[in-house]
Structure formats: C-alpha cells, structure tokens
Length: 228
Image (cartoon, rainbow, N blue to C red; front, side, top):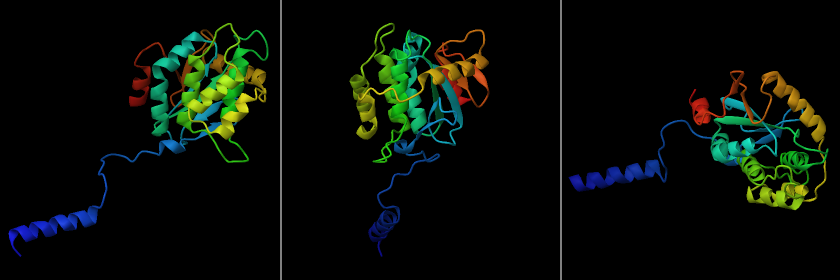
C-alpha cells in the first residue's frame, strides 16, 4: 500500500472509531432540564438544584423589597446558570413583613411561588430549577412596593414566560390562596433572626455549607462564593 492509501486507511479508521462526537475536557455537566425544584422538609422553603451541589445557599427575600429586586436583576441569570450546571443549590425563603393584610401583595407572590414549586399530580408536570429561578426574576422585576402587585393572571403569564409547564402555572391564574403564607413568614423570620438578630432584613443570603451570612453588597460575592 502506498503512502496515500495508508493515509486514507488511517483517516477512515479514526472516523469509524470516533463517530460524530465532540471531545470535551473536564467534568461532565448535569442536564439543565433536570435540575429539580422541591419544597423543603419544614414546608416553608423552595429548593432549586441537585442534591449533590457543592455550594448551597438560602435566600431570604420579601416580594416588595427593592433591594431584593436589585439582587435578582444583578445576579439572577448567574444563579440560574449555576443551578443548571449542578454547581449551586438555592433555597428561597419568602417573607411577607411588608404586607398590611394577610392576603396582600407579598403573600400572593409567595403563594404563587409555592404553587409553581408543586408538581401537577395529574400530568406529572413540574418546574425545573432554572425555570423557577427565571420566574423569581420576573416576579421581582414586576413588583409594586406598597401597591397591589401583579394579578394572578399576570403571575401565571410570568411563569409561562419562564418556561414553567402550563399544568403547573395554570393553578396560579386561579388566584387561590392555597398556602399558609402567615406560618411561612413567621417561621422564615425566626430562621433569619437566628442568622442575624441585629440586621434582620432582606435580602439575606446565607451560606449553608460554611454557616456564614454573605455580604451581598459586595459586587463579587457570587463569583467569590463559587470559586471558594
């Protein structure tokens, strides 16, 4: 076999062996579509992400808190990306201390969050972690501090735009207060007070792995956390 024939044979062998593949160095990443959303065992938190995520945080947030809206605007997309790739798990713990009534703006938003986090038992549909994170970003981007806030239909539309399945987001449009938001806010405030009894406010991000409150007013807090 001549030199040309040998080269053709080698190339053919490589193609047959490799097939249509893409060689990527490093650790395989989880499928973003499968990052789960679950309600925590205590019933008052919503956890996004894989069980083996190496970094875990709790985010205490109030639907009418403008600083919480800033947090979502600045870091929401990064949070969704880290959740999708299995690097981060986020537990949202809503509070409603800015409401003037039990079924006010903040309570209705928190209720919609827990409805979105509950799978549809009939169709088996459920939100993914990145979808839920995008829903949170939408909710805080459309807050109305001191006002009635978004309607049930508007929140359902936000859930749909975030990619949450219709069987799940459809419950939100009905506007039913199906969740104990008073018990939720009271319990989550107790957790928040244990973290910081002096500056007990929102947003508070707590590093569950290292047991530390994070300074979210440091612009590099998230990248620092993920690289530590």
